[in-house]
Image (cartoon, rainbow, N blue to C red; front, side, top):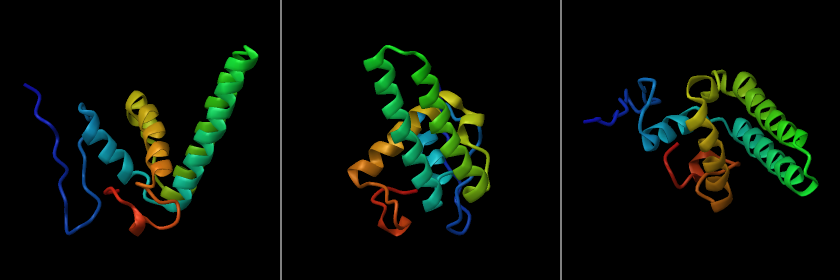
Length: 127
């Protein structure tokens, strides 16, 4: 039986997670703690949006190289956010599959208004 990993909170500080995380809900909670800086979130949203554009162009124009452009632009923006603003390693280095899914889920949460690109105090979900 797989027991879920519960985050440990120390004086309301960032929770500690033990990697690898096997269940996705816990991973997404970890992922959000790695994306607390507003500028980093903005870069992630920008990179994912540019990536979506290139993915659509790859399909519409039937040119596979556009998929590479989409991945490159998305990860470039995200990694700048991590190295310059978050001062941490991207989650994609730790758990690439869950991280890729979480990039899109975070963009969805931003579009739905659950996560803010202005102020973390406006978030409707824990981050």
